[in-house]
Length: 158
Length: 158
Image 1 (cartoon, chains in turn brown, green):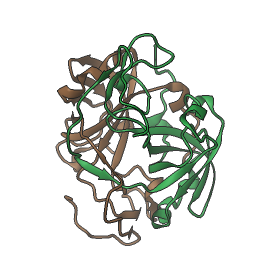
Image 2 (spheres, rainbow over the protein chains, first blue to last red):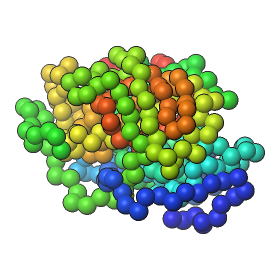
Image 3 (cartoon, rainbow over the protein chains, first blue to last red):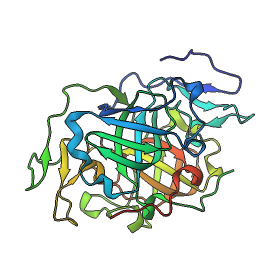
């Protein structure tokens, strides 16, 4: 935990369960131009940044045929985020919002999701566009993007 | 692990690391009409099924303002899936494909993702459309869907 235990006005922290229910493997790392959280764009739409997804050799065979897709979904582990805030006041809001109504890295399971454009794959390294995370962020999964199930162009937000 | 260790022709199993790198909390359960994997639709596009996302009381405050969004992304844990297949031959293909080019529940970190329409939220229960998983599947996260970053209507697939 790189962050303090401080809670800002309006924010709510909870006690998390003492143990975990399941475990994850870090299957690689995402390399980006962003060295600190302050460097990171607020989200992938605000970044055309190109990054590299470096998959561990053990998992390389899993990339077969991924190049047939134009886009992928990356799931990654926000290892520098605290997990106990259930309501947060992001910089762009004045009122607290529930953690599950935010894309903040701070959440009980700090799993982030980014839709990226696949530029190329060579060996165990993907070159992708629209990265937004800190350099070295642990990778959990890569999924092919399916417009039929994943794209909702007219989804409403406040 | 509810499945056997069998590997079908063309499929490739790997040795996974002995330990885990991080742990997850199950924050709730997804209730669906599907009692077995055989009952489940192949994906969310093939299902208008309505389900309930039952969030544990500890996390209810995290749902504040989620009703402002029309759609959400659910992340859930495919607890009945084996994790060691790195190439698979799904029923609709004749050749093996890499696990990261498939949306199969079988993957090193069996985290699945579904984009669902939010029908209603009452207390700690969301009613949603487009569920595809087995009844009782453990929930990991709920995120608001942002068309700006998550929707790529023209994404290509084979």
